[in-house]
Image 1 (spheres, one colour):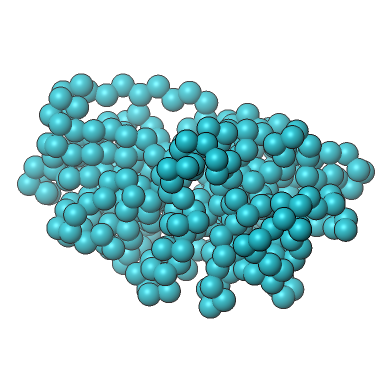
Image 2 (image 1 turned 90 degrees about the horizontal axis):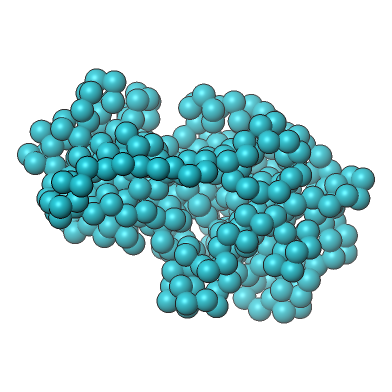
Amino acid sequence: MTRTALAAVVREYGADPQLEPVRLPELRLDEIVVRIAGVGICHTDLTAAAGGVPVPLPVVLGHEGAGTVVEAGAAVSRLAVGDRVVLGFDSCRRCRNCSRGRPAYCARFAPLNYGGCRPDGTTVLRDGSGDPLHGNWFGQSSFASLVVATERNAVLLPRDVPVELAGPLGCGLQTGAGAVLRVLRPEPGSSLAVFGLGAVGMAAVMAARIAGCTTVVGVDPDGGRRDLARTLGATETLTPAGHPDVGRRIRELTGGGVDFAVEAVGSEDVIRQALSSLTAPGTCATLGLRAGRNPVTVDQTHLLGGRTLTGVIEGDADPHVFLPDLVRLWQQGSFPVEKLIRTFPFERFDEALAAVRAGDAVKAVLTFDRQE
């Protein structure tokens, strides 16, 4: 069955996506078609659209999608038509890292998520003229009303979860929460600082509270985001403008520094501030993505004091294991996803992009009319 969808297509680096009709191919045995209910706009999508990630053009981006399975290939065994799913990143599920529960470091992560096509090189989309469009962005390309995915990156959602809001769990929220709960693993009573209070940083704040951290410091220039972070679990917030040496100020506030830091900006200055905020020993996880190469110089004496700087992709989590945990925390009220989200109809993509670029939305989510 050939299906038609509405998608946001990037045809030139630096140009905003334009809404166009696209065609999906005949489904393969291991594939599913998901009708998207909502999809988050992630910084990585914007970086790719600007040419900072080498994805081929023309392309449909979007990788924080959630919706309902409307078609399933004959080899699909864990999902069925009518199931609600959240889509995460793709992984081979067979290499050494996948086999030991670390698919974020899959040996085929780059071609599966950034290649713009199926593993065999074919594309899953065509435009209105019948010309090929690159898709499979993070195994989904969910800036579209319908997407092709597989069981590898589709996670079943409970019926009582608002599916139109669930998409950001698949990337940004998984990244921030996973960095805290899976990588840093703070003990109850620990202290933690979060640099950058976007969706990733807010997820880290919520995760720190869940982990039992008694001191959680949020750092961001935006007053509204600092206020929101306090409602989500931050015990103290700082603006970089008010403190030329943020690391020193955090050491003063905490009597020597925090046990852990999450850096969700990716700039050299902020990474150095995060390291400087640590006690000895302490660990900083850097999560922020910058285009291309991003050389960073750090003070070796920080590391000699027993401090650690580690990078984290996708929360170092297996979505099939970790996303159900986050959903349960959401259902219990301790991981309130809805407080981060501002929704926009998909047809108002340009307004959503403007809100993201202006910092007016912590997490913008594009929604589609429900057809269940």
